[in-house]
Image 1 (cartoon, rainbow, N blue to C red):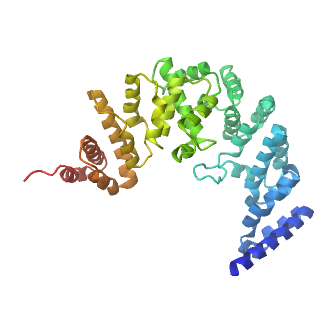
Image 2: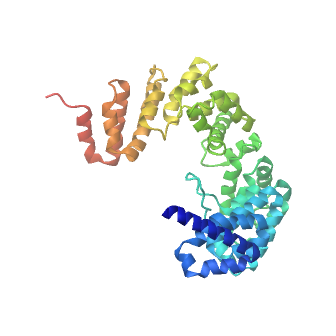
Length: 411
């Protein structure tokens, strides 16, 4: 029972440290951080996860800041406990008090350096975001004046932008307020001019902001091609749907595994994006869900006129399936009809070419072998040609040999 003994010993240490921390946290922290045996056993990190967070959450971040800020090992806990309290009703006022306490601390500058990096997250797809960004996002709209007062006092431009961007991303009211501040010129003296465009980009992503205001912002961006109002609105809907599926409930997983139908996902997305047009919403959602299960996603296009439905399928050949396995792309293509025009043929070719670049980078020669094993026909031909072309771009010397493999010359 070596592992069991180890586990029992650790549990005993945790209980003892917990009682010591409740009685005299500064003394307990001083010992744990400075004792060579504790350091060798990796106890500061273990206790941070198991004990320190519980003690700080129970006592409150303001009462705990004195010992939490003693060492970088507990900086992440300080951030998490503070965010929990801000969200639970402490609001921006609590953050202002915490910031003042941190400023008075000997380790204040080390903590600020730590907060200039993203917080570590348990989600491997998310680097954790920045502390000030999260504080801004947790701030109630009624506290905007206090938040702006803090922004004026901050010395670093990055800190100002993170706090404002987090707040603006929290909802339509906050985004509209920040946009108004920018347009009136009030932000000019507060935030570096170069960062104003970055803040506009954050505001643009807030689906709850008035659609007219978002379209104006989009039109003002020199990098955005000049398109009709409808095309720009549809583009925004597509981007909103992607963001929505990437945050919160994992609808993709539920759809792929049969626990959610296309109607379930459509209903949730419709509720979250009330300003989006129904057709654009269905097209955007189809493109995302077809990557998970193409047959099951098809009913999203029911009721479309035949030519519109056809156009969506052909466009999706290159506008979606960027990060899926080659077999999944081939399965999706089974739903796309045969091309009737050179334009439709071109869209399928464009789809294969975009996949070839990604798949050669991702799978290397395994992708070439996969294409060789494809059943004969137009798709195999397109896939082979796209591999030869992509190889000619990346490694010109190798392309003729590939050409010979796919299209051997008759003796």
